[in-house]
Image (cartoon, rainbow, N blue to C red):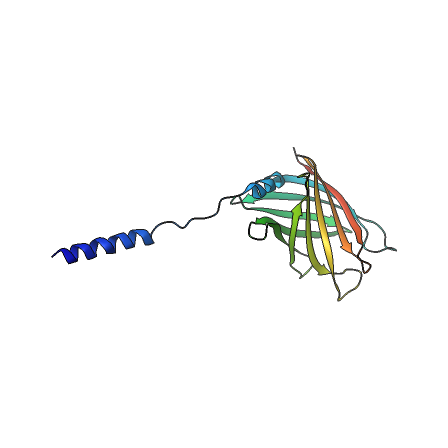
Length: 181
């Protein structure tokens, strides 16, 4: 008679163990660093699309929010040369790779940018690298960097660079984001 009770006890213990909630990771200090992006920002930038091209000015807005303590999700709206552009950027931290990772998609391109990068020793500059279409040489891909420097909690200097054929980085966009009060 003890066998059915023993079997029932083992079955119940196995069932309860199988129902335990899996252990999920907790946000790390690198994820917490991303929280400073959260909020609403006004942006002003200028870009050069080629050496003989006129400067393009762009005004916009960014709404950034944390997703589960691990990701910053930024929705961007801007206008340049009379055209509207919307984009969505994600940035997180991959603890296995020990790198910041992310994506960028926008309403003007069919390319999904995939980022990897790091924060410098000062803790103020995030550099994200990606490969994408070379806008000066259609059909070719190049390496790019997006660089975010926190000048203060309410001011970010932003620049974008592209690696030239000689290996040097060419800055083609500079701007700033200022937190809306």
